[in-house]
Structure formats: C-alpha cells, structure tokens
Image (cartoon, rainbow, N blue to C red):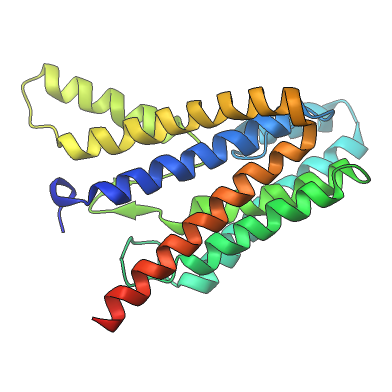
Length: 222
C-alpha cells in the first residue's frame, strides 16, 4: 500500500495521536516542574547544563525522564515486534497501556509530581515507538523536528520541479496541526481543571484503542 493509497482514517488516527502528545506535553510544561515529556532533545540539553552546575538532584530526575521514555519505546518494541506500520499489528495493546500510564500520572500528580510525570513520559515513549516508518516515511507523533524537516524537504523538492507525494505532505501536516491543536486544548482545560486535564489524553488513547480493536476483529473475522 503506497502512501498515495493510505486510508484517510489512518491519517486521522495520526492526527489524534499527535493531538494526544500535544496535550500531554503542554500539561507537563504547565505543571509546577515545567517539564517537556513528549520529546527528549531539550531534556538532554538540560542534563548537560545541570551536570555542569552540579545540580545532581535535577540530573537524577532528567536521567529518570530519559530512561522512562526509553522504557516506553522498549515496551512498544517488545509488544509489537516491528516498527513498520501494518494493519495486522495489535496496536490496541500499547494504546490502552498509554491510557493506563497517563491515568497513573493523573493519580500520582497531587502527591508525587515528579514521579507522576515519569508515567506520562513512559506513555509518550510507547506512543512514539508504535509506528516509526511506513513506505519510506518516518512517522513520529510526539515531536515535530522530523515532521518539519520532511515538510521543508517537500517544499524544496516542489520548487525544484521534483515530484512530491501529496499524501505524505498531508500526513505530516496532520501531525503538526494535531500537536498544535492538542496543545491548545491542554492550555484551555488546564486553566479550568488543573491536573485533571490529564484524563482527556487518557480517554483519547482508550477510545483509539477500542476503535482499533473493533477494526482488528472485524478484519480478522471477515
């Protein structure tokens, strides 16, 4: 199935996953720790800063964040066994685990905010590793560096008169807009519900898992 024939519902699913990550990341930034949890580049930079400053409590926390993200990706790799997108994969399992981890973050936030954010970081590592590539397209739903790079490449190819895969551009735009939309939702809901806003991305993951399992069982019973 080339990208030109990628079903629209899959593009919509990527939009929702990016929306999920956008919500979780903004909630992490708005909480008292102001911690980015959906992507790790900035955290590695902060780790270098705090190492130089000998702020070892912060160093320990940032290392825990990095390990938590890797553990999430590990769980996803162990469950799925393949990062190549395929409708036969059981994505419902990691999706429901993402929902559970975000709920655990919500449960522990009032008492242990640092510990709680580690659960959300595991969730983002798991979500990000669910689908890594498809037909040559690198797919990441929890951060935007690769998405923006591919969009810039596509624009460069287009201006040179080269062929650009329209569906690939649409897919990346869906992820970009989903992340932005999720961030807006989190900003608004955090104002009214504080840390309880974590229940929204948890619910989104659970609903996506249910939808996927219904589709999976329908396909396999046909």
